[in-house]
Image 1 (cartoon, rainbow, N blue to C red):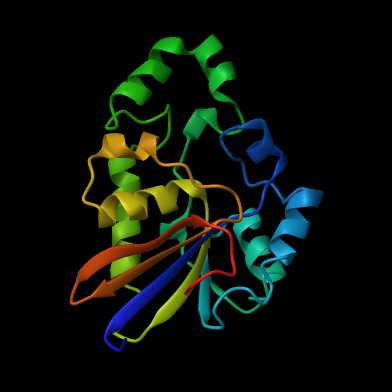
Image 2: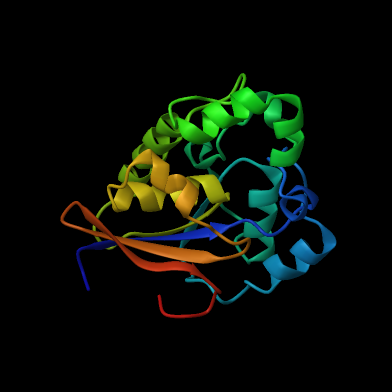
Length: 194
């Protein structure tokens, strides 16, 4: 299978915010999340790794056995601006019009945050920089960048972002041959086919 660039995307393990279904802050993994991340150790390809700068992503990488890894801010979660740390319910109670605009129009960012187009663009730039044929990287990131990468590969509209769900500690695998990306694996438990 020479000539293929492989990209294994791992969503960070759970945090307290993940379990509350809140937009993330730079919070640590919770106790159960630490155990879930440690369960990834030895179940991912032994290749170079990249992590988003968030503590939850870096810690997931470390517990999964990738202690020496680089960080790349292009793999950061969508910037939720003033909504960081809040749940959809909480935002709906204090800013229902802005929330509905954000849900209806992917070009509309959260207050002080980033729109989906910005996220998709920087994720595409990160994907394009992975390297030459034969390269394989594991990227530890959040759900938003994984959804953006998959939407990019499928050439789906921004509205498809809301139709994708990426579970904590799940693994998605993308391949690129001749400049064409494909989805090989989506939202799977670690340890299956590579």
